[in-house]
Image (cartoon, helix red, strand yellow):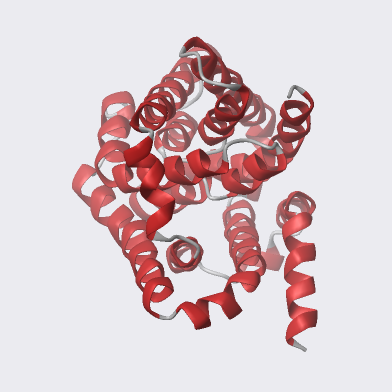
Length: 311
């Protein structure tokens, strides 16, 4: 029985892009399928995903931070400069309404997503660097993300910096630390549970997207083209500029690959959660995060194929 569940988890992990796209389509065309789930469910589900991420972390994963600080610093600067600035510039060029601009900027100011580590593996990138970057950017997020959102969007909307800080600590940092502690002291339990994490994480992310899309289906359909263009450009430019940043600093291809994927693939689930929690008066703010979640898994798979062939 357990072996069958492991196989299902592996299948789900390998087809996450298709699953996310399918859920997005169903929620968009049949919003009642997810409408019964309240938006308040988004935060605890994201916490479950972050707890799962914590279960996969070990002290050794953070050695690259000490052994290769230059690589991490380059990656983090690219993460928190490229994506926020690209988001802001795209909002100005496309003249997005304040609500949608807030959502795009939220995505840009969030740390790297957990899916980036999987995509980096598929691209034959530097896995240790990818994991370390995800961990460091996530730990920096409680301070950096609210500050960047305030700087880039504070003139247009009211940004609760302290509230966002506390939310990120609650939804991201605490679950990751709990998972890390469980992995440290209950290793045998973690070994049995780890193969199930892709199944749990994919279901949680898919349901989060389903909730956001279903509750905003009419708004998405009315502005889908404009938001779609912004999200696609944001993601592609992040991948390209992340790779270029590594190249400019003279890093080898495997490290450029890790940085490119880490920069281009954001924790859009966190952006969606923050939008639903702190910007409920701007319902469209959650839309870019939901679309980004669906898109970046698709584009990440393509990017992995391209980057793998460049070796």
